[in-house]
Amino acid sequence: MAIFTKQQFENKARNKAGYTGLSAHLTENRAFSKSLATTSIFLSHSHKDRPIVEQAKVFFQNLGLSIYVDWADETMPEKTNGITAAKIKIKIKDNDKFILLATNDAVSSKWCNWEVGIGDSYKLNNDKICVLPLADNSKTWDGNEYLQIYPRIEESEYTDDYYKVIYPNGSTESLNDWLKK
Image (cartoon, rainbow, N blue to C red):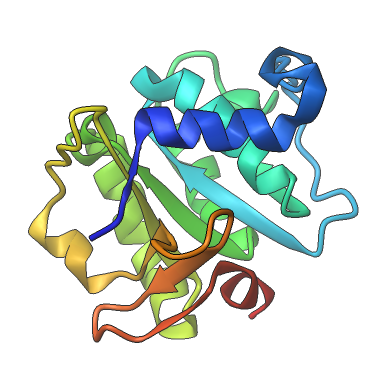
């Protein structure tokens, strides 16, 4: 498995951000819109991974995608509650794709596991759910057995800056092709 380490993913995001660097792209905008992007993504993540979430926003936005992150949504309650859960469920359904930013913290998060269950019910049969596993910089990723039923995003071991989706049966397709579905 050629999963990203957190450091490798940060480097990819920095490269995609260009000469201005990540900080020019990462302001906390609490308004979300699908904008001009053709595909929108609900990004499931642990709030402990905020810097990595910001890097993921840059990474996917530079692929021409609109990214939904709950803490950037001004309509979300400040403290999580039942309203939060109801709104997240709607956002998962309304966005085109569901991607779990699968760090060790996300895998152990009750919210992320709940979100994957919701994403599974709305997205799995349409091939619109995926996992982006990110290992600690020591190349360790705890994962969970149940995550093995979902496609995962990895970088090609042969070509830099080419990303693929690997299905549980071993078949692959380019990330760009998966995003266009």
